[in-house]
Length: 161
Image (cartoon, rainbow, N blue to C red; front, top):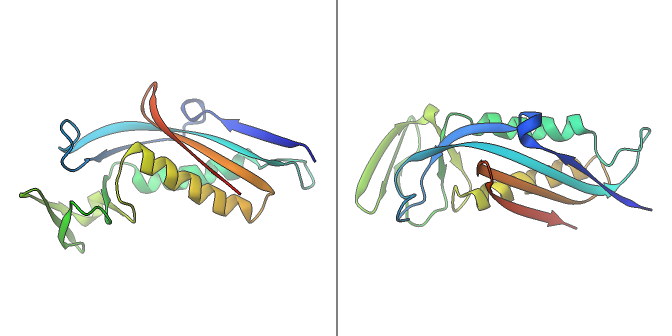
């Protein structure tokens, strides 16, 4: 069977979110700052089903949009980052990085089971989620996601069987 690939351009498909984050102890990215992220997706697999799709574009976009909405207008905080010392994660998220103390309302945060909120980690998260959810419905061999922090600047992660 022939493998095919579908491609979704995030800027044209409106797969985007705006969020703040920080990269602890990084020279220029260590303070809270934000990006208008755009998510591009490629899905490779065998055509199957009644319509012969690799995956229905709508299904792919629905998953990406769900994740984008979880991140949109939030401070992305990676819970597994060893440089972040959490003192509370309920009601008010309180944490410290290199002696600097933060206190942010929980509803303004997206607490992520990740080590970092970098574009690299975000692309890995999107790809893994897409691969898992699409594989239950389609014969997917790989998913590639690029999370762009701005036009022309992003990180790509590919997951495959």
